[in-house]
Length: 110
Image 1 (tube, rainbow, N blue to C red):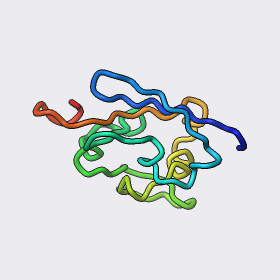
Image 2 (tube, rainbow, N blue to C red; image 1 turned 180 degrees about the vertical axis):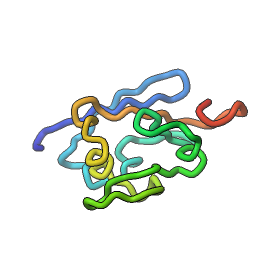
Image 3 (cartoon, rainbow, N blue to C red; image 1 turned 90 degrees about the vertical axis):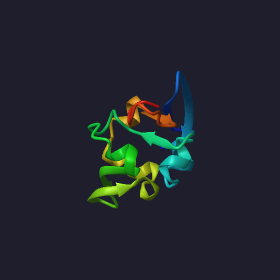
Image 4 (cartoon, helix red, strand yellow; image 1 turned 120 degrees about the horizontal axis):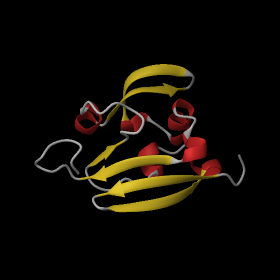
């Protein structure tokens, strides 16, 4: 995996940020540190059904951690490596997520 980069697409309000990260250096880092979350909430709707739980609880419905499937995993327990093992297509496609502040119109409206 030497010199392998991963593209992260972050949607913040009406703008989109593209971030290149070094996989070799950052795969053991907490996911939200790597993707550089900004705002109060981060959601990964491309990978999980939008039922509001991610936004309200900062919880992934499931994640593979150290080879074991775990349910209702808090964001702060997940490393970049865990996310990529659970969603291997991200190695080719990159990671896409939304971050921001929830508005009065409810979850999913950042």
